[in-house]
Figure 1 (tube, rainbow, N blue to C red):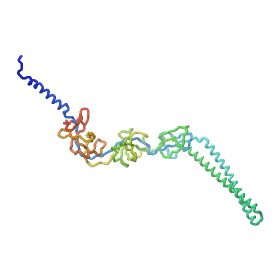
Figure 2: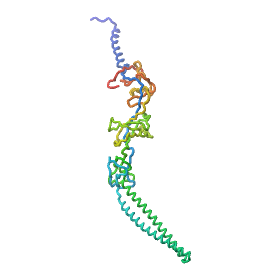
Figure 3: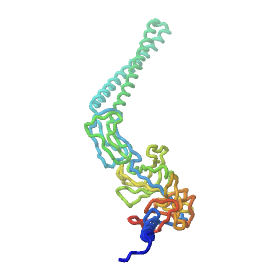
Figure 4: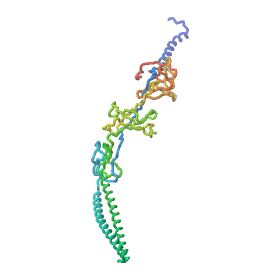
Length: 382
């Protein structure tokens, strides 16, 4: 076998060159120096209609808890949950216990006192007449001064007895009126035209003063209590149009309006609170407590550079976008404005219409890294 005359170093170099080329190709195409696959979007100038999104629950706008003003035992409940009631309708009654007996006793005592008062009036008239007659006789010196004085004292005593009887009559009348009022209060009535949403006690239950037996809401008084992130709730104010989508009716938004923005926010969850009224008011309110999605659309903004939320990145505590310049990445800090519910956000500073920015990337990004623009990433839509 003929041995090669080439030097050993040449042979080694010839063997290493393909290996070096292979390693270089791997480093440039699949290693840390390889271009990262990205999807991109072009910055464009467009009008933006910002919107706010919140989650809330259906609540009763007018809610009345009906209960007794004095302690008592519930005798009957005339309505049930879901029943429609009218203003002044009796919805429950309390057991009068001995109240009827006390009413009869007070009425009897008042009748007896009325007879005594008539007698006292008669005696007072007679005593005054006698006192006047004896005074006239005294002036003519037909009776002694002592006799006239005695008649005057009798008249004064009769007037005092009449006054006492009159005062006692007034006291008994007031007591009777109080008992009658208490008797009337045994009938619990609805203060509004509405709907019974809760029954809190059953017949036989002893209620204390102020304890509710029924919960009634106005039939057209349902609204939504919603929460919004404080960081994105700029522009939320009373009177703005809105849409409410109930959890039981997905895809069927109902017109509404901001009825009130609460003056006190939730400091724990960092949320603003607001009430939304249906427009027009619903004839049949949804269940109280049902979840609802609320969308508030604000005024359309003038044209400005707009990008997708996916093109917004955070680096070293700052907010910006990765621009693609000559096939390489360039970090650009940006100042963002309002956003809409379609994932678009205004760029106030940092980008211009026509710039190309990264939306998604297959690997971490860094300044100056080469990129390979593709339509889609493996397993991910742009």
